[in-house]
Length: 263
Length: 260
Image (cartoon, helix red, strand yellow):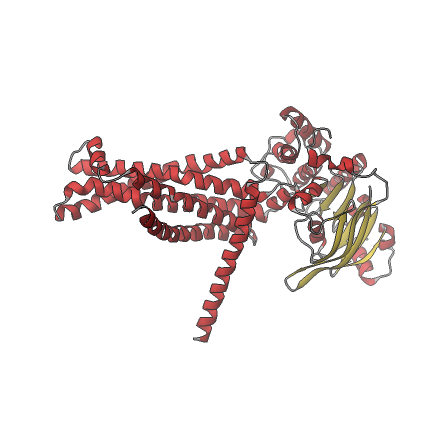
């Protein structure tokens, strides 16, 4: 951590970490695209060190929610607070300071296709740390080893499978030692065995790094394995929030219908 | 009649909207240009990508226009008994107009399509979003570096086009009326001053700015998957070529006013 430049070191000025204090707070968040209201008064709180799984049918705004948190989209109204800092009104520098504390795994992994696996993981390190080439190389190997991809350093993203791309994407998301991890459907499009491996990997990394996470997923098994709490989105609203067990046993028709398919 | 005026109104609105969006995009690129880091490695990579890899194409285009100019001009000048003016006509035409505009259009085609397709592909596969999520400014790393490389490389490539055009023109002339290259150049440059080279060559900086900005803008606003990438590549070439031609008209007039 000593190698990080000033922006990355700004977390040292944060108050002492308190387990359970809210790290991510969303209040009355609205977002529309044209006439279509995608998110309608979203309220969510994620305490430090916990994982929230956001479930819901396709098109209910789950991925948009993550993009609002990391500032790739702007909300229409409401507030999003990250580690006590309101993101609305932040300039690019301020937003980038927050982004450095967050890791984002895209649904498609979104690896840079002209860079090798090694260069993909090194990309955020080159830009936000003052590590020497050898230190950076060691860190990249450590990250890729933690996701089981240390043998594929020189391969291009097009030469590896979808599951492997997700692993590399996860390593890249963890490169700057983020405190918050945002995962957009990490198991989408993967076979059950690879999905299970990704779940185990995420769980292991969360425990090792003490991350606060939001995972957007359709995969109930994945939510059950990884998440401390679950929120079900329907028509842009949080229909129900609680533990996986509470939602699974709910009598609300839409929730029951959603969970029935898996059982 | 009403339908025609409505569709013209829509087209004008869309054009104004496009120029407004391009203005917004340009201001983001300019703001990014003055912020650290300066991305020197990426800038040099783009110089190489656009400069050295476009070299053969502009050299060939220059040679072709030089040859055609020599062949076409010769018969006209012979008819008017002004054959001795042939070297000057070739050099003046190439240096003043043909070299800059042909280089601009060739680069709009090769580099514009490349930038539009590359950035478009990055956009639809969320690579640009991933860059932003990593706290890296894509307007700096992707757009500014390419725009700067286009601005810097165009005048240099224009010199290549000019030289190849004049050289090929000499060969075409020498095949029918043997003349040494030195003598050809002396005659060709007799009525041309240094300022005649300077303004037309450096007006290609404006072409570079147009090509870089339009191609990056079209690429970074791509939507609609693979088809969208194709559309961005095509529109980058079409729009930047069109604007290069329009800019040429305006700049030629300005050059005639300021460097009579």
